[in-house]
Length: 101
Image (tube, rainbow, N blue to C red; front, side, top):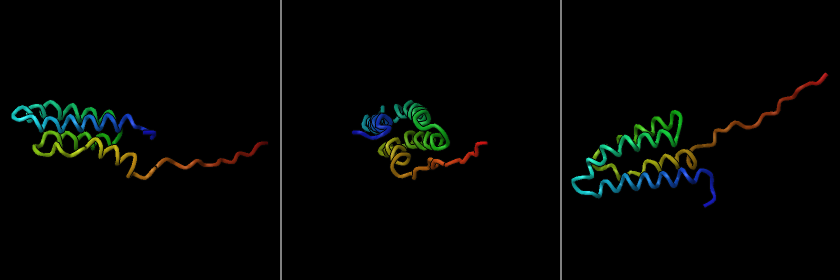
């Protein structure tokens, strides 16, 4: 596994797994989501700073707090959006000509 930002992917997979595990615990799982949802939103915000991170943190909060939506891998989808699907918007280097006297 030799690609950039692999730590974000690994952390995202772990957070997605934890979010899905809470759904598997009967009776206690929904109450664990009340604790997990704000924690996951905070982690998403820290992992992806900027406007996209803010939007993703709201989405992960809603996904974790709403019943039956824990199966959506929000962290993994955010990673794919940022590093696979999104076009690279890094500016191309420019050549600046300078005259010397």
